[in-house]
Length: 213
Image (cartoon, rainbow, N blue to C red):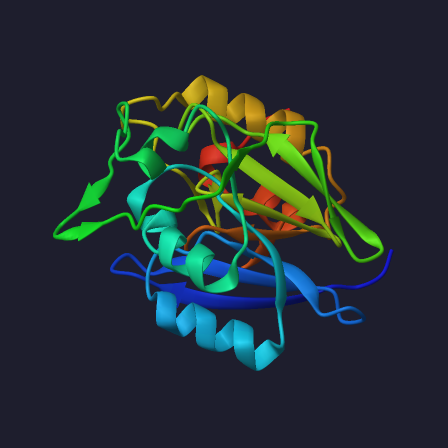
């Protein structure tokens, strides 16, 4: 496995983690969850010399997709999201919040649907798309390079909300057990908010996931 470079940016009103993944050899990569501050994301991408292959959305909430249209337009890249959560990108949230305060999603023109089991290329690595519902019906995670980018599935010491429309605590716990707990303890968890952690640390310390098989 060839290492990848990961840059984390905090964007938007809720301090969402936007990640820039890049293959150091080719300069190609992806932007995950451009939730706001399109200019800052694009400046960081340009500084890194990123050749953007796509924009990956873990789920369809405003704080994770707010700047997706502007970033897509500037990079010329397609937006990848689950079919279940894609309504927010068309202005029809279908139960998901497409408004936060006075901010609205900037709509992208090129949208491609992905689902669990799909793969995406990244240099000599492969990004595995995982279905991890619970925070939303169509939540996805992305596994690559010894890390999992899981949106609002697992945080350091916490988990994503399941009381919003389309959320389900049983589904979230099942997704963590099925897709995250099976990973090596040293696997890094790149969450949608807050600091990076590891599978091993969360197994030992996360009060919401105790006794989870």
